[in-house]
Length: 114
Image 1 (tube, one colour):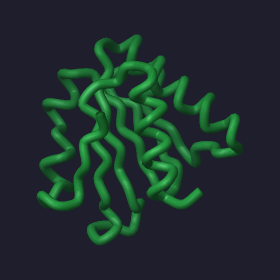
Image 2 (cartoon, helix red, strand yellow):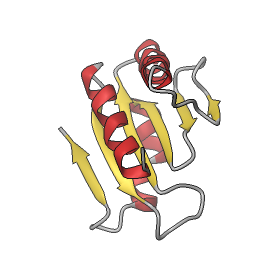
Image 3 (spheres, helix red, strand yellow):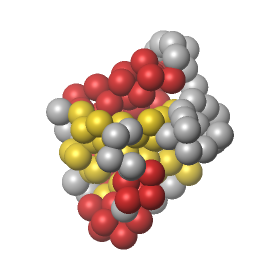
Image 4 (cartoon, one colour):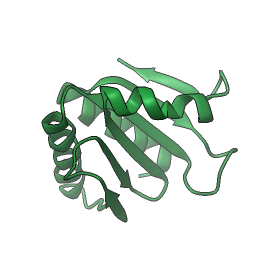
């Protein structure tokens, strides 16, 4: 599965578990760290944890494991690194504070997932 396919799969999994404001950003021409960032919001710290854990479980079923994960237990901002795709799941307050889209969206490389 290439980076774009993985990013789309991640968006779908997060959407099915009621994540909100899901955005896929192509950062391949801006950084060597990843090709895509997927950013989503959970309604509470419990929901953020649940979204991150469910995402990992669903992708494990397909043989895709994270390289690293941070913040899942705290539930404010979970970052899960899948190599070509880095997933950020925020609670509302943290998402507003960090506003990653402002840093990476150039007006042409971001796509909202509905």
